[in-house]
Length: 189
Image 1 (tube, rainbow, N blue to C red):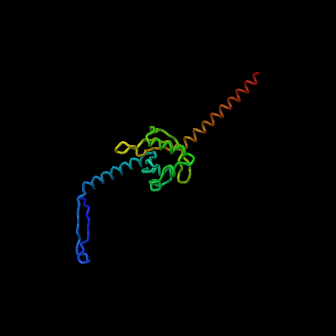
Image 2: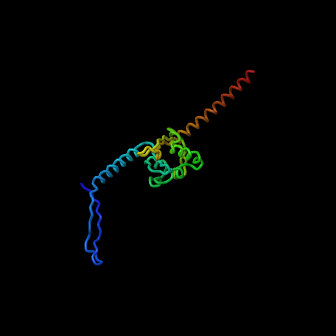
Image 3: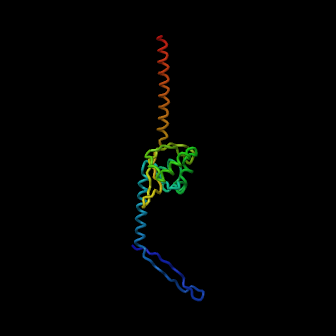
């Protein structure tokens, strides 16, 4: 199989088109290389899509460059609604931006290593706030310069709610035990 790029130009004689000149360039090697890259990209996206966690790649400007199906499902946004948009403006709650944006900038400037585990809320398209546990790595270009970061995340909203309920119950238990201890001590005197 061969691929060619063909440029056609009309030949004019006395104001009329009397023929066509054609220039043909064999681009088979380039096209095969492009198809291989496209295949690898598609394969990589399939791997990310079957993962049970959310994936998002964000460039230095905060623009979303890659997402997987799980992130779309959890966030309620389509891939098209996410790609090319600013992660912080679209997903991060306003009250958290002043905390998260500077950390992201320092990370992308190489001022410190990525935090391997980080929890923060995100907003879904419908405005629901969920808590996500993120794992982050830096993305570097062929020259070793930081070009963005890749994050994988799990929705831990239910777990966090259960932890808070347990903390509340333990606090109540401690208060009850203190009250019982106090009453027993008073009854014995």
